Length: 110
View 1 (cartoon, rainbow, N blue to C red):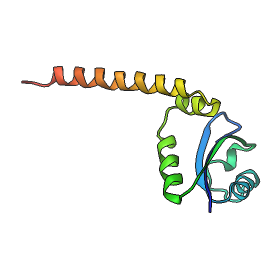
View 2: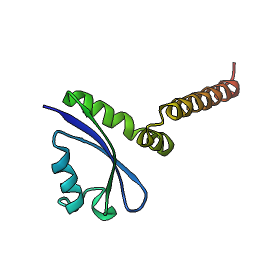
View 3: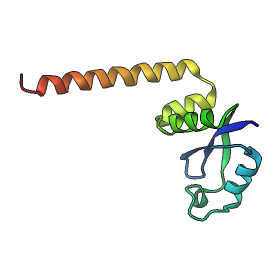
View 4: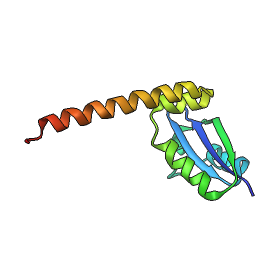
């Protein structure tokens, strides 16, 4: 059985990330608004922006959680297949975190 991780672009410009073992069925559920409590319900119409097939449920869930934590810029780079761009964003984010750590450590009393 295959599993899928996917990103939908919503009508308000936001992104929704999910995973499923039946991509066609899940897209239909999102587009039809099967669940009124769902994030995508009030943001229809939706467009499939990106998807990836993986082999295990665990892999799909891991990728989904990882992507959900990404910045909008990183998600857009993934959608465009710009892996160099993702790498550059990661470097920038890492540098920002290191700078923030240094500032905090300087503020702490010895």
